[in-house]
Each structure stands twice: as C-alpha cells, then as structure tokens.
Amino acid sequence: MIFEVEGDILLSQAEWIAHGVAPGDHFTQGLALALREQWPSLSKDFRHYCQSSHPQPGGLWMWHGPGVHIANLLTQESAYDHGSKPGQARLEFVGHALRQLAGELEREKVASIALPKLATGVGRLDWNEVRPLVEKHLGSLQTRVILYTTYRKDVRAQEPVGVGSHD
Image 1 (cartoon, rainbow, N blue to C red):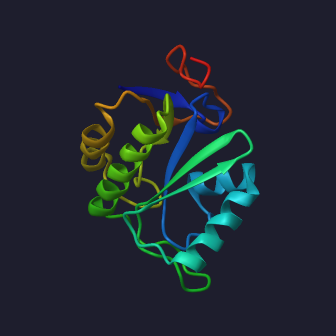
Image 2 (image 1 turned 45 degrees about the horizontal axis):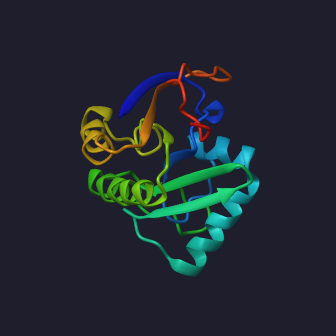
C-alpha cells in the first residue's frame, strides 16, 4: 500500500524512514544532511560501515538508533575520495536497493515506512522513471509505504491513521 503525502519526513510517525545515499557519502546534502543533523551518530556509523565493508551501489544498510530505524539505500555512485561528492544515481542501483528493502520490510514485519522521491534530488534521476520501481518493489507489501512527494519543512503530513508502530 502506497500513500502519497506532503510534509516533513523527519516528523513522520512511520516505524522506519528510508533515503538514498552513495557508498562513502558524508551526508552533506538533502535529506541525508537533515538526518545527520537529527541523529549525528548515523553518519558516523555509516562512514565506519563504508570504511570496513566497502559496499557497492544497489545495496542497503540499516541503522537502528534511539527510537528510529533508517534504511540507507545505496542509490548513487560511490563518494570514496576525500572531499568528493556522491555521483549520480542510476535506476539499476535504485531497483536493487528497493528489492533488498522489500525483503527486509517483510522479514522484520515492518508496519510502515516513510520515503522521499528517491534519487531525484542529489541523485538527479527523473521521478517518472523512479516511481515505477517503487511501485514494483514496495506496492504489494503489507507494509504501509508513506511516500513524501513534496517537502514542507516543519509540517507534519496527513499520514494514514495507524501508520506508526502502535497499530
């Protein structure tokens, strides 16, 4: 089930939040920056994971913090060189990462997840090409998928009733 909303994804009541990043990303732009500011240990743990595991685009890395679960979808080319910015996202990477996310959501029996229009900001992809991948991989799950189509800072979205973990 996919529900479209407008608002600030950081105010979501969903159990999990997902976003797209590059392997080696420093979380200096877009939603990744907002997440880093909200949960500083997320980016530190991600850098450690990347340095020790050298993940490839198309993967998934889960971070579980105090009262929050963040799905980091590796949708972009790597940013391993010091000071380098993430490369452009590719549909192939988005599809692989969403497939892994779907498996994780089913395994963990997650009631709800919030995600932005993946890979369309810093990743520079066209939403009209990404959206079918989201629908293909997440649309038939039991998990409620809360798709933030428009960002509105400090505005709580009108999410479906019972979207949080207290169903």
